[in-house]
Length: 103
Image (cartoon, rainbow, N blue to C red):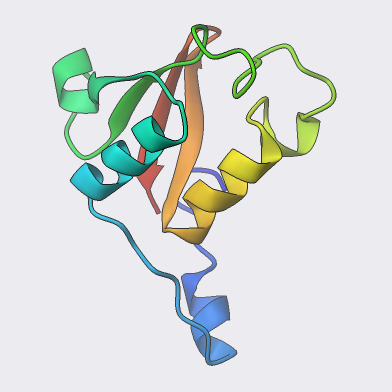
């Protein structure tokens, strides 16, 4: 998912609902999955509401240059699915820094 896109109306039209985690819940869930959570996007200095994670300390989860994970833009597909299924999405800031935003 890219910023500004949401599948929620589509899922709602099918009678399905997307569970949306709070920022704190998502940060805890990401840590539990082995993601190096550095802080919030506010702490990074680019506005409130998102989560700042290291894309270079956990190369088994993130690889900016990966051609194998091109459909998920360098995020391990299982992790990407988990995040999107809980109302968030990943977006690279640079090759070593990833941000996670609510949809």
